[in-house]
Image (cartoon, rainbow, N blue to C red; front, side):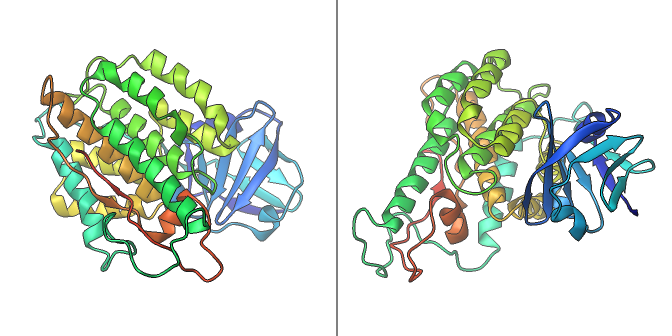
Length: 348
């Protein structure tokens, strides 16, 4: 049997796979990841991409072809996961879980603004944007109403409307009502994790991980928020539902966790820009939706600090780009033409 040692294993994956002789089934094989599920509906993924490292992840140097093509049941026992011809081991593997940021020694001034600046740098450092501003429609495409491009633009606008709604929550007590108002973003988009789920999850994760710091947005009833997430998460796919719930409980992928931790610890602007670009590279297009959610949370914090009857005090422009716009909605026409519009998330 071919034995493959893992490089890292997430803390949640370790706990789940530690159940002796538990049966696992392959749920999905997508790109560079194999998603497996047990009879309780718990999900773990096996990947060879470092950016996919998560509390539920097992990172390998390379995915075995036999595993990615296998529909045979897998069994976990004594530090290994095995099926016919393949055995994964993690006896001496490095355990991964997000590290709490160190904020007790000094207060990092301007945290939300510095995070927003890093997010903005992602768009500015990638050359000409794939899209254009919302008020600068390109002449190409027939622009006919009801076409695939029109549907794509409409769904992208729904996502951005959700971002704007969350961005101006004037108080922690308003977070849940605004979440209820944007429930339509759950499951919005294509792919393994729809763009709406990624955005919403990162918004929740950002506020959750800040809850014990000096940047906490007071007044959020996390018990009610999580109960709401449990209800609406049924609208999306099994895998995305799992990740959306994890975000609400303070668990995310390594790139996003490291980005926000570095920002809380006073990382240099150049470091934060580099880490933001790392987040943007998560998945085929999920990263930019994650950044949109982070930006919405930071903007909500700024709005909250502005006091009653706030005016917009922060702005995050996240250019999602053409690939992301397709992911939000649907493929373009066979000619590849569309009446393209931007998907800039902003406050105000």
